[in-house]
Image 1 (spheres, rainbow, N blue to C red):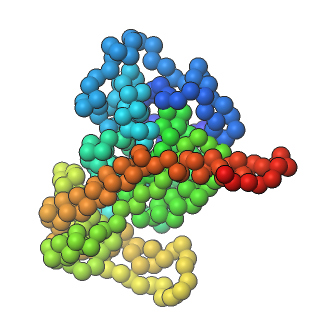
Image 2: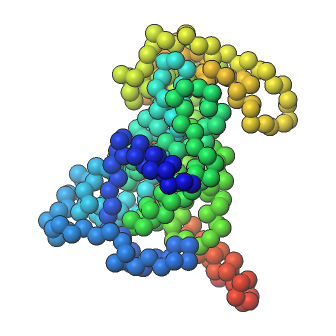
Length: 331
C-alpha cells in the first residue's frame, strides 16, 4: 500500500469522523512477535482520570465521540469489544446514496452498542467493490491495500486496549474477503481476536417483511434496502428516481456450477437488483430491529467469551513449537 493512497483514505475518513487515541486496558502485549510497552502507547496528559471521566451511563459508543480521558473507561465497560461497521462506496441505483452500506451498518452497530455497550469504530468504507468500477462515484482500492488497511486498523484498535474486534458487514461483496481475513489471523501470533458478524434475516422477520413487500425479487437498492435507508437517512432517499434504472436480472452468463468475477456485472450492470417502488419505513424498521437484536446478542456472547483467546494462544504456542524443535502438545 503506497503512502499516497494511505493519506488519501485516512483524510477521507477524517472528514467523516475523527478517531481518538486512548490508554490501554492491559500492560505489555505481544503483537506479531513485538512487545508493546505501556510507555509506547498514547497517554492522556491533560488532567487526572478522576476529573475527566463522565458517568458510565453517559459514555457514547461512537469512538470519535469519546474524549481521550474517557477512552480507557470505555474500553473497560465494553469488555474489550470494538465493532468495525464495514461497507463500501458504490452506486445503489439512482435513488440511494453511494454510502448506503456504511450508513446502515453504522446505524445498526451504534443502536446495538447502546443496548449492550461496545465501542464502534469510525466510518469505514474500504471494502471489496471491484464489480462497480464502471459506475461513477465508486471507491475501489487495490486488493493489497484493502487487506493491509484492515490489518493495520485492527492492530491500532488492539494497541488502544481492545482484545475483541467484531467486523460487522453491511455489504454483500465483502463476505468472502472478511472470512478470508479472519482465517489469516492464524498466520502469526497476536494478542487480540477478530470475529466476523454478518446479519441474517430470521424466519419471523422474513415472514413479516414478505407480508408487507410489493416485490418478490431483490438484492441491491431494492425494496428492503431502500426501506432501511428511509429509517436511517430519509433525507438521502430519492423516491422519485426509483424507476430511472432497471433492476431486472439480465442473466447474460448462464454458467451453472461455475464462479467467475464478472457474474454480478453479467446480471445487474446498473447496480440495482430488484424493485424499490414499494419501499416503506415499516419494512426498514423490521429489518433493522432484527439485525440489532442479533448483533446485541453477539456482543454479549463475545464479551463473556474466554475460549477464543485461550485456544488462539494454545494454537500459536503449538505452531511455534515446530520452529524451536519442541514437541507439539496441547494442554
